[in-house]
Length: 528
Image 1 (cartoon, rainbow, N blue to C red):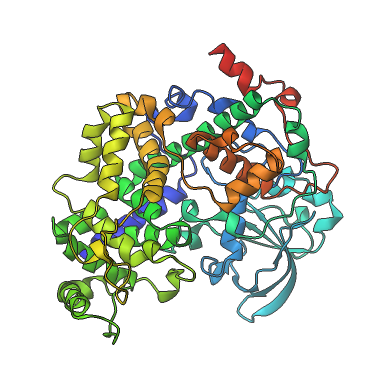
Image 2 (spheres, helix red, strand yellow; image 1 turned 180 degrees about the horizontal axis):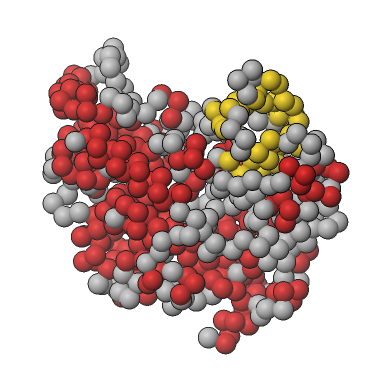
């Protein structure tokens, strides 16, 4: 039964990724206006304009085109050995092995330089550059065929299957796609990728975006951030709607909460764990027993200690024995699903954020009498303020038990209770899970209609600070992005225009509403 459920869910996941024409509920489809009332300024964000120096988005490809991720996501999947498929098949049917993916190019030219590939049964060695696109047509759309910088491209990698005529590419250029191999990776998820963690270009001393915004008023800058933030939240809602369509509401909510619990370093691991131990299986095997759910999650995560430590006290030894008592009953069911040790990034991780503590929070959240969806549905009928207050209380509660006053198995007992989730992580759940949930499932509820105004701000981070510095200069006031929606806007602008800002290039320019002929978000807001 367990393997059937697992492979059934994996099949749903593959179906979700395989579908180019996304299956969305009418009420949440941006193209049909379903989200316009909740994100009224999102359309003023200029993310769909072609920015000549920006390779983050494919020209001519819009958010609703069936692949709501960027080319950079595909580049990261190629670059990262954790996700890059060990074996590919070229469009001519030859096996392709990646010996070296190449050096990530931050200048003009192909995406990766100096790659080394092995091709065919004879494993012949091929060296050269690699160009990445979402679809094969990207090569022609970007004009690479007439650009001498691309003469050394030895392999054209796309996400979706597709093949170009050989004469359109450099002589002998291989072609392969990543879609099916990535679908076969049970822990892979584009939305769990932290694309800012991969190489990106250093800005010029005065980047184009800063020059454009230099003379904007404070109100105009805030309007830009508001529009960008609403667009970012609308995209998150769009993706959540897809997951509901593929998996059902309980699994979609469970998976997104799990990923939010993973902190920045372990989002991929938590998303993979949610797929390997689905919500329905947690409820079926553990019922309302949070310890049983915790033992299963910890076991499949590969984080349940197999040997006792001298540093453990008697209470810890007894707690681990209780977990093993549960895990032994289910170990054979899950043995093929256990995540490998390198899944988890534990370096320089605060004890509060360790997956072992966060999984206890998940166990408590998903073994309640009512499902999380049922509870949040009842709170969605209240005002946004009351809804947020109750969810924060739920998330930051300190359940009784072993972890109520400990930070690790070997650590000291703390004098005061310690919540499994702090306010900062709860705020992350509100922005990244609750808001898309309300927008797609309860878009007409009182909570949904007021959520943007009451979202508490997440903690500042390096990306926010860097984006603000390059957009507004070193002397800007943080009041520009004091609200959570505007902080989301900073993140969206960073991902769309800063990650590949080749700002030393004279052709690069930050798009403005004046250049596009569209009204600025400030003017649009005045019209509302």
